[in-house]
Image (tube, rainbow, N blue to C red; front, side, top):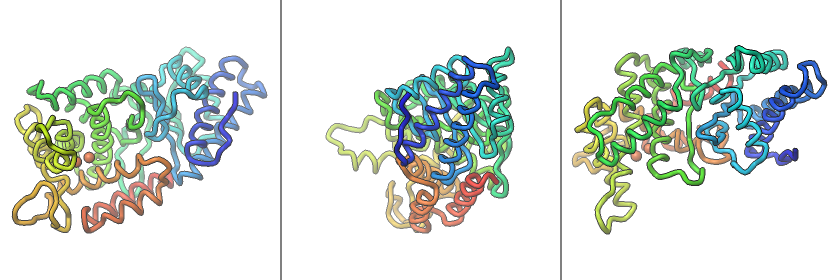
Length: 372
Ligand SMILES: [Fe+2]
Ligand SMILES: [Fe+2]
């Protein structure tokens, strides 16, 4: 197998994927004490260390979504043979996603592979979380002082069917084809109980339709909103409602618009259209309507969309989702590392975004990056 030899983020990502795929393959062929297995274990750990050192993070999520691999939310090219090897290994072992956490060593990784081959199957370990349904989640609450990274609880795992059901319902909301949002609510309830360690973003994959991209962007915003909200000690139904607001904030982008309308006009109107679309649905909390309407209002009250007459600051829930929205937009850019992403986020402080919330998210991200 020829491995990528470059030094950028994409090359390091591919190397990690390739080494993981090779490890699964070799361990399925050889005994656990075979030298080739030992070397493959060390290669994975070295690739993981190199990835963390380059990105400035302390974990990486490798997620399988409908046969496509995503590493830290970014798609891996499907035509890479090393990616296909890992996809097959995940499928054989019923693994939806793996999150590797700093501290993982050869003994723990080797034990995980032993479990995969044994009747008990793939199981989470302290530094290796297994997701079953397309991505992994954890159950521990997250606070600015200590990011949670608990093992996945089967009762809280999000299944591929749940994601698919919610995705279909999201598209139906935009098309005006449903009067309730039961599946989206259920998905958000599960996300709200997770620590938000995994997410999905298929942006850049061929064949992804516009409504899929909006759904996946909404999912990312919902997860980041959840992390912010928990750090603000928002729990229970209020947390779920706010996460749902994050999921639905941009649904107005999917409205068909009127003939002759240009992109800028559609963008300007999407908050109003989204709010109007979801306002009449059963199961949509008022806060989601408010957030859809206000998520582009500026913190400094400068003119924004929608035009509000007398200038005003967005309401607190909209300020939280706005920070999550900006962060998700920045962090999915190719080749952006944590310090750069935070620097870009901070350029919006005080103008578009609430400074206190930007600082809170920065602390959360830095705590997560340092494994704290
Ligand atoms: Fe928006
Ligand atoms: Fe957005």
